[in-house]
Amino acid sequence: MESKCKSCRENVSVNTQISQSQINEAIDKLARNKNVKFVSDEVYEFRLLQCRTCKYLEYGTTCLQCGCFVQIRAKLKDARCPLSKQNRWNYKL
Image (cartoon, rainbow, N blue to C red; front, top):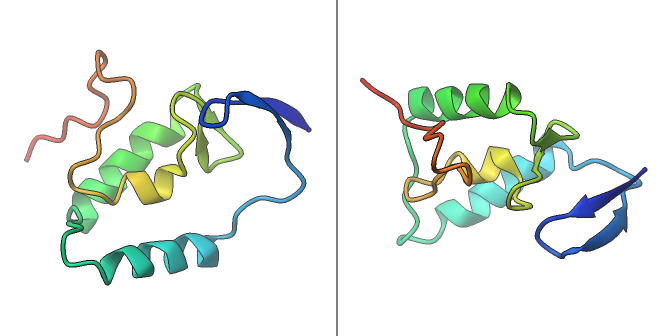
């Protein structure tokens, strides 16, 4: 399957999807950096729900607006949804 990749700006062929264990491993590596802050599990799940209903989500993992893996980006406290005008990640307690 070929698709336009936002982050690398060229057509790429996707042969495999990133696994949940690979995503968890990447988050664990980020957690070792003391400068990286994460959102609560509640906010994380809210953000993922917003991504799952977004037309720019591809393969269940990749944001076509910025090219990120949403399960990683959604975990980062300072990250924002690339559709900032729609403010999809605005979580109200």
